[in-house]
Amino acid sequence: MRNFLILLSLVFCQFLNAQSKGTLTGIITDKEANNEALPFANVLIKGTTIGATTDFDGRYTIQVPAGNHIVVFSFLGYKTIEKSFSVKEG
Image (cartoon, rainbow, N blue to C red):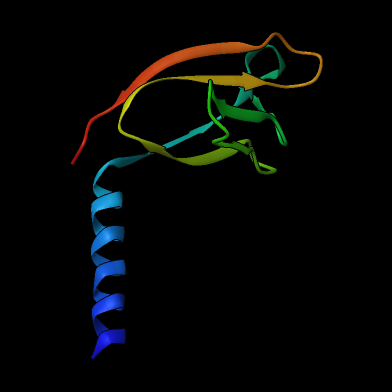
């Protein structure tokens, strides 16, 4: 019974945690090269350790906590770009 209560508590905490996060997804392309994808570019949430690297098609997905954030896009040889966005709870 004790193990069941611990498991139930963990599941409930995960549910609460999931309600306060959002998903940031996108594709990074180079507009000067016919919108070719930029594979292995860095995508980071400024001031955190949350980030990802784009896949071969330039796609990325990041789980982000609710609030106002700045996403930083960087790629070797390119200018670093910062964009602000917000995630609402629920």
